[in-house]
Length: 87
Image 1 (spheres, helix red, strand yellow):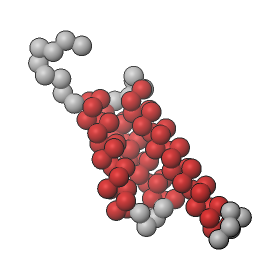
Image 2 (cartoon, rainbow, N blue to C red):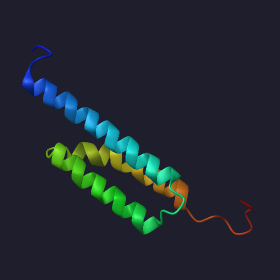
Image 3 (cartoon, rainbow, N blue to C red):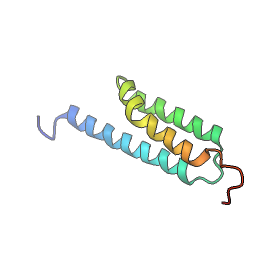
């Protein structure tokens, strides 16, 4: 296989799209001050659907790698604050 192999070029392009999409979604989840938890959860669901359109046979990999990443971000940003805590 060479770098000019169309299948390899498609795979590299798809991986770049995946990386960009995951980074963008993570950034929005962390940084958008007006984003609500329901909106964030919807964003994660839309991102999952797009990723699975790009890589339809990778549900297991998504569940193993990316889903916990997004769940961790949601937990960090929207977990209930202990009563009496000062922000």
